[in-house]
Length: 354
Ligand code: TTP
Ligand code: MG
Image (cartoon, rainbow, N blue to C red):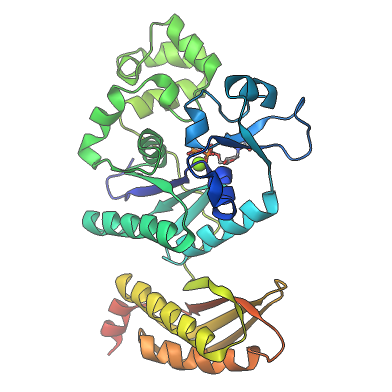
């Protein structure tokens, strides 16, 4: 991995489906419960995830419901509601994308953010801000791992679960991985673990001392990949479908409303947050977009392009409030509002121009 490449912030929600259910079933807090496959009955269904209280009894994802009930007969089972989890996942990804970095949504509850170009202290500050926003804004717990390389960041995240935060400095990577088991490498399953055990390789430090040709003979290309990992070389790239073309924030209102003053207050908060992000990434914007999602999920957006570049929060709020006014209607309740800026330019570039 080239030294110039930055840290990866890896976010994985804790017992995601179960935590989403807890938001609407607060009475289940502390009780062992599981989210189970929607279509199947108790005899054929499986556990999709279990909360951490249920995990203490050995219940885990993929386990048949019948087996889970043997382990804990009073286990409360909730049928999965994927639309609901996807909606929450979208809110998380919108929030993460609003920082303006390259980001990969690895799964419904995992994301990897590439912070290349950012200094170390700022990386940790942003990661803490993300954890706080997920917890305070969405009331959901997550774990964050930070390391140089996507695989190492995920491993940091896995080892800090639940509700954890682990930063592995670049020069601590080898120490961090050497005492981990080979099965702690994402993607190393039971079969690979058994094959490696036949060569007396149990820990990553054993892998580091192994003969790379023997590993390739045993596992093909994958052998050289995990050998490189054991030597601190992580070539896994972020696969980003998101280009830093815009920065913004959006949020649900506390309750659906068409009260202009409530909507404007939220817009002001979002405009300030967006301008903060623009300033922290040293950018200027020229275009402004507002978004309104109504109670029935119907969504409208409006955009305006200024004649100049700026990073002003006041300009953003005053233009956004003009744009949003015609979208607030007497008889339609608003559920969610958003503000976004685009046509971005580096502020250093402007200094060169003037
Ligand atoms: P995971 O992130 O693997 O698990 P988790 O979020 O439930 O728990 P944690 O990260 O704290 O260990 O998966 C995310 C969601 O994906 C999970 O909540 C439910 C779903 N899922 C399945 O439906 N089947 C599975 O086998 C797994 C592993 C997950
Ligand atoms: Mg998770």
